[in-house]
Length: 359
Image (cartoon, rainbow, N blue to C red; front, side):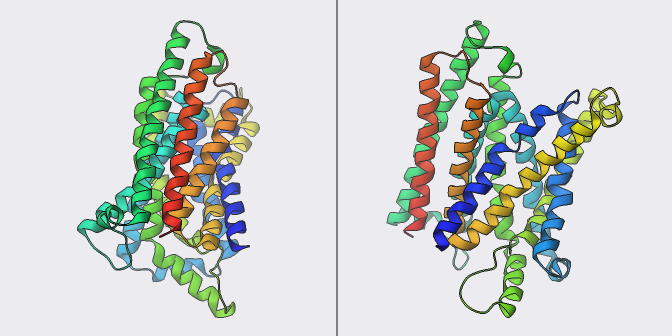
């Protein structure tokens, strides 16, 4: 039952992550940077401490008692992840929910699995897996095989994206449903996002002392097996401060450069609806990690949890891509190519998850 509940929690989190951008499409008359930062304030500043307050008594004391170096490192990974989150929004904008999410999350799964092992190869730490261990163990070889297959899947999806762009330029695909589609710029920001988005997982690892502290406090009143379902909620606060910093600075720069500060008070636009849709998008975004933490506490394997989470997001994002007609009018060959790439990436994610599960 623990495993079943873990999978259910990851599916809910994956659904939230794969769906969060949809409310933004209902925002009228605002520039991208305006609705992104309004939603981000809910994602990174308002909802995380509210979730911690509801689930972890005295969470502020846990943060105050944490070593300053741990807080700084957790915040630093949040800064890097913030760039990944910022470019995620741009990647989805220029490539669409389906293709953008698939490429970004595929890369995120790859780097989230491989970078820590390379780091610990040079800076060994008790209980941490090194790249050498991956090379010389059956489970590690499965992880590396999955990563290789993931790279192949990303290449296939990139091919599909180029086919789609060519058909748009030739007038063979529906331009209205793809008016923001820009493959060259989109693939660049998707790669940046995929690499840096993995830093969220590193931030969770860096701030593990806070989660462990919350878990120990919970166990004093809940003796027995099992871990605290909401232990990661205190760590999220610090990580997301970093994410807020990078996104806020960039969006303010864009507001100034594009002269869009007036969006927030422009009464010619449906302000109430815009703020409500942004709040819905931002809250939905945070729920992905709220349920991720719940799933990880039940599955008990951070790496496998991360991979499973990515698989569900890819599945949901591509379902939305079909419903939003992002591939309407493209050739059968392009459709088959993108589906082949998506299936390949999902297969790779499952192989990596299997490798971690047999460790």
